[in-house]
Amino acid sequence: MKKHQQSDTSPAPRQCQEEADAPAGQAVAGFALKTGLHTAVFLCLATALIHVVLVFLHVAPPNPVSQRYSAQVNGWVFPLFEQNWRLFAPDPDPANRKILAKTAHTDSSGSMQVSPWFDLTAVDNSAVDHNVFPSHTAQNLLRRAWTAYDETHGGDDSARSERAVMLQEYLRNIAADRMAAHHNGGTFEFIQLQVVTLPIAAPGSAAGNHPPAPVQNRLLPWWKVTPHGK
Image (spheres, rainbow, N blue to C red):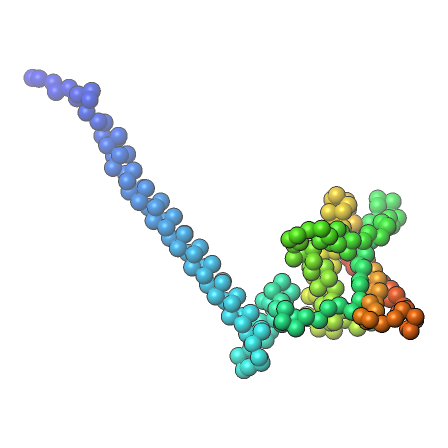
């Protein structure tokens, strides 16, 4: 009887099976990648469409649709996507405002350590001065946050609506993040803001005709934040 020896050049059965399975595995991976890409594109387009519709309802004149879904529209637009018509009808601020902040930290002995006042507005001004293309955040983020807070709170700093609470948290988080960067990650659990308002004289008015407007100094209450201001 003759023994048939397997040629050394012929592929092993296992190797042939792996080569047969490879194209199938690549096809499955390619299909999964294509499906994931299509899903991501669809979600991006859907989000963009929803954003455009909600912003349109926000800036459009009051209508039954915007009034019915006002809670959803305001929840999406405020405070990050706020829109207004001041580009076409500018309303300059009648005063210069300086917003300062200080933080407090309770050490291991239980004593309260309070930091000096830090001028947040001066940081923004330094980023805008002599800058041909200043950032939107340096020009408007802190200023608009304070304006929105001032419009929704009374003189006693009491929040009387859900939007007022949201704007208070918005202003607090901006100040806390900036103080955390100023402290280089130092720990603090409380933050307080002080707003100094200096009215601007009307154009063409003589300085001697009217006494200078008094400087207004508004001290906000202490707000609790998570450690490190985050």
